[in-house]
Amino acid sequence: MHTYHSKDGFQSPYNLFKVMKKKGLRGVAPTEHYRAATLKIIHRDGRFIIPACEYKSKDFGEIIGIFIADHIENRTFAEIADDVHDMNGLVILPHPMDPLRKDAAIRRGLPENLIKKHVDLIEGMNSRCIINSFNTRAQDLAKRLNKPLTAGSDGHSFLEMGHAKTWLQDIETSEDIYEELKAGRTWITGYPSIFFTHIPTMLWQRIRRISYDKW
Image (cartoon, rainbow, N blue to C red):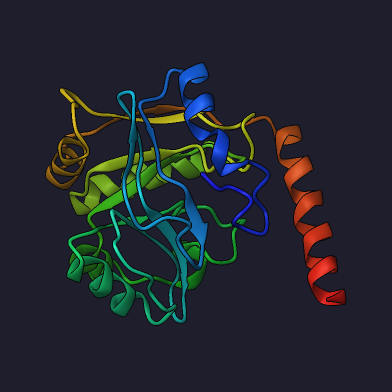
């Protein structure tokens, strides 16, 4: 999910634990665009904020690093993945089969051999995929390449958070989360967000872009 640290985010990062409690979530990963909002795991009352970032590679589109401990420059897909792994993070391929997103793997022609080599998990459920068959095709891709699945709401506001969930068993610490994800012991559920929930953040993105241009 995204907070207002991303240009299209509408969610305050200071309310994340409150929203998690309200929606029954144990953890969230704020995957801000380009630059992570936090580089440390934040733990409170059995809930976790996991450091993550969504990068736009120079060659093959978007790539997520999770459990990152330092900032990474947007370079090539392989170089970003190597940087994430060098700090013992995990690489997730987000919404790979959504042709409506110009930076999705399907649009940018990401070769499957790079996915096999550099990607740890594939996002098989993204709630901002307007057509659910895009998620089904992502799950088919993961099965064909023998990659475990994650799910993400890709929420830009509290209205969307929790629409997709990655389930893990026997989680007590952030280390447990990391080990279960690394081992690929995941189960996903979710559904596409209703399109009208996208509208406020789409307008917000354009307002911020205009403000930045004027500045």
